[in-house]
Image (cartoon, rainbow, N blue to C red; front, side, top):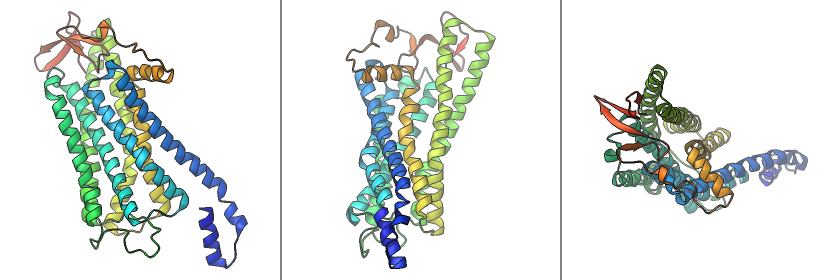
Length: 366
């Protein structure tokens, strides 16, 4: 950016105004430190999630398989996209040519889309686990999870590499970034059709589904709290409190998702529909705000979970033993395991409501 400032000043005034350009250096250093911090947190946090599940057998379950899928997607984003986004942001141009620019843009769209769709699948998984716990093991199987993951990547490829390399995203249907004089620009061009399909299929519709599923979970949590206040018992209160905390975490998850991605997709849709040119400042802010969601995900989905925190502690202390494996982590016959063996209670069916009990039926499963 400093060199770009010198070139700009030379073109405008015919002389080099070095002092004016030097004044921009502290801001550039601060910006660079911030971008590097986001990249580091994204890579480090998501590597830690994957290692935690791999090292601790107690964390190996269907739900955490989805968390690992999300972490892997965010890790790839941190390794394959964010360094080039930071380079482009700090340099103010693109020195790697049109072909690699289109690959970079495609990877960006694909991995961000896959991350959002992973969040969607996790919300649906939690919805079924909370609202239909007795049927959950038969509804959410490993095979169905693999199918869901395959669909995530197919959809992500269909809205990224395919349209961008065939020119379906541009207004004249030519492949973007080719034919430029200096080849130092890297643009993501948009047309109304592409914007509407991409934005609604990969953000607005998933957002609507996530809001509906989490709202339903919140309602069940409130019903749970009322039942606990009416007829408390020690075993089920402990289980319900833990699950209630996990449910309240969903508010943070949904809030972070909306805060991080809603500004980007709003600006993205506006640009495509109204043929607006890119505002570099606005585009950078909303884009990196979306990237920040990949750094936040490991905290929201893992660090707020007690077993993940314990696994993190063991990994960071370089302890090789798995302290979580004991006979108590295996649920006895006829018992339901809460979120990968956090807590167990006996499960029984009572009308249309699944209940937990320790010889009693005064605890609603959430």
